[in-house]
Length: 157
Image (cartoon, rainbow, N blue to C red; front, top):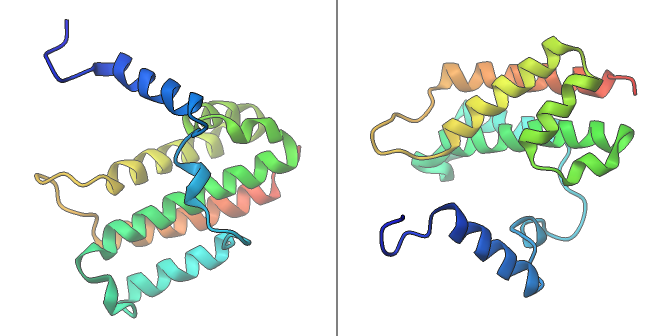
């Protein structure tokens, strides 16, 4: 039994079902502006600018913003692979896509993608008791994202 006011998992599922009935299918429907989205290299160039400190308007959120952009670039690399090989997988949750990636990519690459996505997902969520990711960690994640994007782009169906 859940405490009053906390609906737990069932409440979340009910809200999703209600949203689908109302014609709203999720946050992705309205998150992308019209027009072409930035490419992975363009996203990595923005990350480089954030890491160099050449975006002073980013203020204190630059490190989490950098992690978010890296996660989006990683997810976009996986999406581009699926668009070439299995377009239906693009509609699946990312965790399911990471499991399916083991079949198409070599196991080492699939494991690297999953580990990086998990680290970036953790870094993008703010917790008062944790420090934001540091520059060294962000640079390593940036390099890993670039390598993985190249590996996935070269993957044969």
